[in-house]
Length: 386
Ligand SMILES: NC(=O)C1=CN([C@@H]2O[C@H](COP(=O)(O)OP(=O)(O)OC[C@H]3O[C@@H](n4cnc5c(N)ncnc54)[C@H](O)[C@@H]3O)[C@@H](O)[C@H]2O)C=CC1
Ligand SMILES: O=P(O)(O)OC[C@H]1O[C@](O)(CO)[C@@H](O)[C@@H]1O
Image: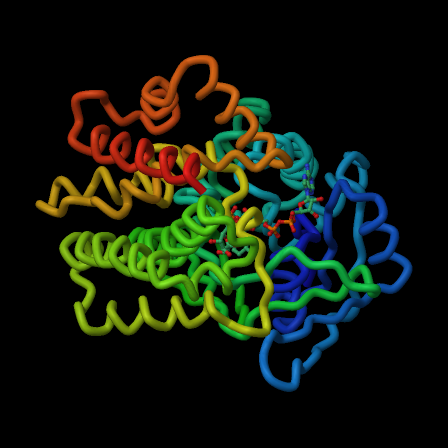
């Protein structure tokens, strides 16, 4: 069995690649980092270390890699594959679509064997979005056949894998916890048997619970931590003010999730506390600038902050603390993050109100708009006095 996985980065090697290998797949990574591709091909194996006492290590063997620009080889790998997965980042999905389309076209001309393509990105509807990009590249005749033979089931993935540098370039340290839920209703053909994957018929509650708890909580700590001068997540979470605000934001998203999806209140509280414990893992050093990366993507209307905040109003919840998180995200001015640089320049040129409206889609007369603006002004004043 062959699995082609786009993105041999942290989550690619440390989570998806590892589970696919353990499920018996030969894993072929596609990446645009030549050094990474060469290292994988010369060693054909890498190690995954758990961030916990004793730091146990497991080895993922029998792997290979292809450079993403070698379109011929990538298309052939997809034509031969039993499964395709991705962990490249939401903004990169349009860029890998042509190679996937070429692979599907080649495959479909000589086999009717079904294929599933699973985007493992932090976003709602990742595989569906990838399908749109891929199908836009297909000829009409291929498109009709691909509709029957190629599934794009959405997925929710959860495992914290921080930015890291080791002497061994392929070694990846990951937290012990992981969760990978896949929408079974959009699989075509046999269900891939992968230990650790939970197949569900309705992914929405899973992806929203994960995105609006793990990623919302993480974003709160990252953006507030950045405003208050902390470098790492575990330092920031030890600040009572940040922990309190994050907990309160997660009470807001929790109330929303319970109202919307019928989660048990007590169990959801336990889920939140477990996640806060994961953020504080002393074996992981995760930079606030990594967790806060790409603030424009994270401020988008459907994403982890604005998405739940807007929905809160439909359930009579006032998202005061989510508003604080949105304000802190707007003011994330980390110079090495291109999206943060753009936000900062836009704020200087057009003003905060314009930027808030443009990137979040929140209307000026919406209650959330003034909540965010009040917090943003307070944060700006606080930074001036510090
Ligand atoms: N790191 C984490 O803890 C988690 C990350 N995710 C998601 O997984 C995705 C990847 O995140 P990370 O692994 O942290 O990032 P990463 O930066 O470590 O890995 C991304 C990899 O994709 C490669 N890449 C970029 N453009 C490419 C292209 N056109 N073709 C092929 N490969 C390309 C990069 O060279 C890099 O090796 C993101 O969507 C992230 O939100 C999801 C859950 C956990
Ligand atoms: O990967 P993104 O979407 O940039 O966001 C970072 C977030 O993703 C994770 O890397 C994994 O869920 C979290 O650590 C963090 O909340």
